Length: 353
Image (cartoon, rainbow, N blue to C red; front, side, top):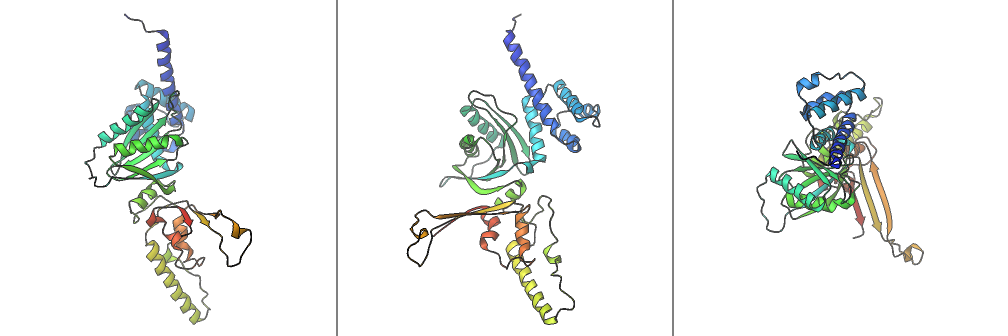
């Protein structure tokens, strides 16, 4: 019988230890309250195996028991990656998501879409360009696929602890990607998405948020739905101006009329449904100094004046929606604030015409 070189044995053992450590660190970050739910969703360990585990013991001991079960089942790197995808799906708000929009060339028809062909093509493109990369897929609801990419380099193995995520909805021109530290890989990722989905080009939209479902609702124009749980204020129709009962009746009538106008204008602009959840909107202003007076330092300045304004809130659009009814701002608000969902943008550049 042929004897394998000792070096190959060591490398195989090292690979096992690497996968084991990946499992350990992945399971360790799962909250105990979600552990059983995520493991059952993963569906790699049998019901009988899960029943042998004491889920009330110290977390380190629990993790060790689960890793041993994974080893018994001869779990692979891809199995660990799938578990990490499921964890990320449960905790998608921990990442910041960018939106990419693809388009077809002039006269190109919509082709029949095959998800398995898309996966195969996407993976081949990345592997052909970069030897050290691991790609894992998990199908999700609404014909979506979650893609996990662990990037390496020509000389380094893929870093499994800093992956990039892509969520692509089949037969649509949109893909959502988690912001990655490896900006140099974005062109390759865009190329793989464009070719695999049979589009012609791809551009990054000026839209970003932690709330993936809200981004999807904005680009697909699906506003009239329930979004991620948030601490919303009292609905507009239930708010009161807190009028003094001893106030002059004419003032009360005037206030009531104004309140009704504000309610009507606000509903016309924002609708009567919950708003998609964004945390900020950013406006960059570039303008030349203009003055009727001659001379002055600014008048001679060739470079435009630049200013950056950023509006932040745990739920920006709901906050904007409540400004006028609360008496904080006049109705209607500036179109620059109210156009965010329709334009699909929360980064704006304002320049002189």
